[in-house]
Length: 354
Ligand SMILES: Cc1cc2nc3c(=O)[nH]c(=O)nc-3n(C[C@H](O)[C@H](O)[C@H](O)COP(=O)(O)OP(=O)(O)OC[C@H]3O[C@@H](n4cnc5c(N)ncnc54)[C@H](O)[C@@H]3O)c2cc1C
Figure (cartoon, protein in one colour):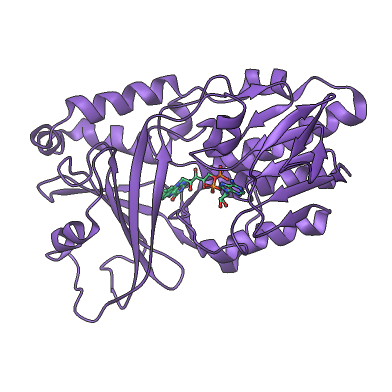
C-alpha cells in the first residue's frame, strides 16, 4: 500500500490545478486518471474567458485570441458585440492538458495515467483507495460530471445537464476571423446555443442542448451553410460530452472526501463554462489543504462552504431562457435596442451576474 496525503480522482482541469497547488506546498499527492495519457479524448471546446487568462498564465502558443461576438437570432438576424478590453482564448486543448500535467509533475505531483479510481473506504481516520493500493488523508473527487467518488460516499450528484457536440474543421474560411459566432435557436439548441469559433489551426463548430434532447450537429452545419462556405472543408476531430448546469451539488463533501470541478457542479449555468472555476477552486482547495496540514488552518470544507459559487441568479436566468423564451420571442428581442446591451453583459461582464 502506498501512503500519501492526498489522492485526486481525475486529472482534468480541476484535478491538475489542485495537484499542482498541493505539490508546490510539499504535500504528497497522487492523481489517478483513467485516460492513457494527458490530452486524449477531450470533451471540451476549451474556450478560456478573460478572467481565467488573467488569473492563470497560459502559454501564448497554445491559444488564439478572439475579441468580438456575432450573435444570431433564430431568423439569422445578427448583432455585433464588441468590448474594448474583453477577449476569449480558444485553445489547443490537448496540448493545454499536457502543459497542465507537466506543470503539476514539475511541482512534484505523481500522476498515474491509465489508472482509474475504482473504490475507497474509510479506515482508521484514513481513506483506503482502490482496494488498499493507496492510503490517504484526503480524497478529492475531480472525476467529472458523473462522479464515482460522489456515488461511493453518498455525496450530491449532478442532475441537470446540457449535452454538447463539436466538430473541428479545416479549410473553413470565416468572414471575420476575430469573431465568436453564436446562434440562438431553441429548436436545434434548446436551452443553450450553437457556436462557430476560430480555434488554433482549426475552426470549431458545436452545439449543445438541454438533456434529454440530443444535439444534432449535422443539422446545425446545414443551417450554417447560407453563412459559411463548406466546399473545401474536412472534419478533423469530433468531441462532446455532458455539462452540468444545476449548480453546486449538496453535500459536496463528507469528512475529508471533497468534490471539485464538474463533480461539484461548479459550472456556470448560464454560459456553461467550467474551466475557470475548475482551475480556480482546484488551486484554492490545494492551498487550503496544505495550510490545514502544515499550519492547522481552517478545514478545507469550511473554506469551500464560504467560497464555492452558488449561481442562484444565473440559474434563474437559465430557467427563464430555457422555459419562457421561444424562438419568436428571441427574433423579436433582436429588434429591441436594449437587447444588445443585455447580451453584452452576458458575454463581457459575466462577473456582474452572480
Ligand atoms: C462539449 C463541451 C464543451 C465545453 N466547452 C467549454 C468551454 O469552451 N469553456 C469552458 O470554460 N468550459 C467548457 N465546458 C465545460 C468544461 O469542459 C468543464 O467544466 C471542465 O472540463 C471541468 O473540469 P474538471 O476537471 O472538473 O472535469 P473534466 O475536465 O471532465 O475532468 C475529469 C477527469 O476525470 C477523469 N475521470 C473520470 N472518471 C474517472 C475515474 N473513475 N478514475 C480516474 N479518472 C476519471 C476523466 O477522464 C477526466 O480526465 C465544456 C464542456 C463540454 C462537454
